[in-house]
Length: 247
Image (tube, rainbow, N blue to C red; front, side, top):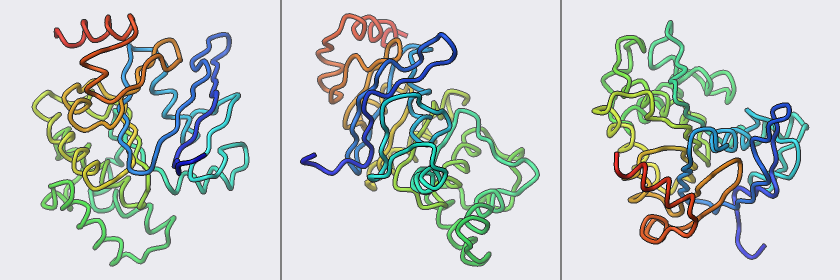
C-alpha cells in the first residue's frame, strides 16, 4: 500500500451462531486518524471495534495492527494488545482499589515499572484528564464522568498507540458527557489514533477525520464530517441522521 496504515481490516466477518454480526468489513486507518463510528443499535459497530483487540474473534477476513496479523497466535494477540487501549461504556474500575492503584496496576505487573515510576506516570495522566486531586479516592467516591476519566487514564498508562472507545459517554448523566468528550478531544489533538463508537454528534462533527456508518454489519457510508452530515449519500444514512439530529 502506498500509505502507512496502522490498522488494516479486509473482509472481516463475524457470526454469532446463525446471526452474521459483521458482513465483510473493509477499513484502513492511518496513524493519528480519528474515526467516529455511527449506526443504529445492533448494526455491528461495537462488535467491530472489539475485534480489533480480540475481545471478539473474527471468523474470516484479516485484521492487521501495525503490520501484525491478528490471528490465533497468542503472541500476536499480546503484541497487538500492547498497542491498544480500550474504554468501555461501563468503567470497569476495581472498586476496592484507589484511583492511583487502578492506574498503576498494569504498568507495574505487565510493563514491570517500579512503583515510584508508575505513580509518577499516573499523576501525569490524572493531570492530563483533569482530575489529579482524585488520586487517592476510591471509584465509588467519584462521579460517573470522573470514573470514566480514570478509565481513560488507566488505558493510557500502558502507552498505547491506538485508543478504542465503545460508547464511552452513554452511561453518563448529560452534564458529565462533556468532561469525557473534552479529554477525548485533547487526545485527538495530541495525535492519538482513535476509533470511537459514539452518538455524540458534536464530537463527530468537530473532531473526526472520517465518519464510518454501519448498518446490518456493513459499512454503508464513510466520509469526512462535512460531507457526511451535509450531503449523505445513502438513504439509510439520511434516515438515521433525520432521526438522531431531531432529538
